[in-house]
Amino acid sequence: MQGRPDARPERWLGAIALIIIALISLANVVTRYVTGGSFSFTEEFSVFLLVVLTFAGASVALRRNRHIRIGLLERALPPGPRKVLIVFQALGAAAVLGLITWYGAILAWQEYQWGSLSPGLGLPQWWYIVWLPLLSGAMLWRLFEQTRDRLTGRLTDEP
Image 1 (cartoon, rainbow, N blue to C red):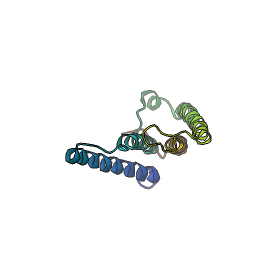
Image 2 (image 1 turned 60 degrees about the vertical axis):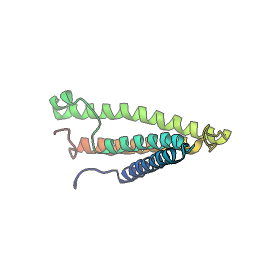
Image 3 (image 1 turned 90 degrees about the vertical axis):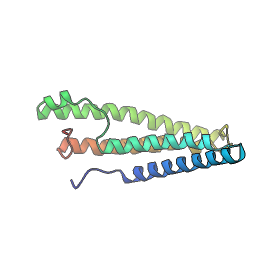
Image 4 (image 1 turned 180 degrees about the vertical axis):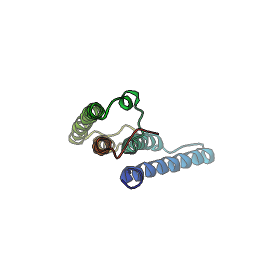
């Protein structure tokens, strides 16, 4: 494996979300200081972009093997049982991410069908929700890549 594993699309998405959060927050502060009022959209967009940033960052951390995991037992086991434990860990994480992806997709579809609007700006609610299944699906893919690399020895927990 050359270098360290990467999740470039998620890194770009997270960076763009962070830049937009910083820009709209700065614009809101300046506007509030100058005019005494503030933009109405900043909170709704900032919360949405923070969720996107969180999921994108979690996907990058997953691919780079940077999520918190207690590796004491894993490092103490011989190679055979260690692989069983790695598969067990991956199955547990895949079950959680699969449920988030599945139910997030159902929720996004229902919001699309119902035509629900966001409370602050009146934008379609599914515009915000659709990112949940998309990014949790990306995390599922990164989990698969991480597990494959851990099982083949290309990625270890050693510091």
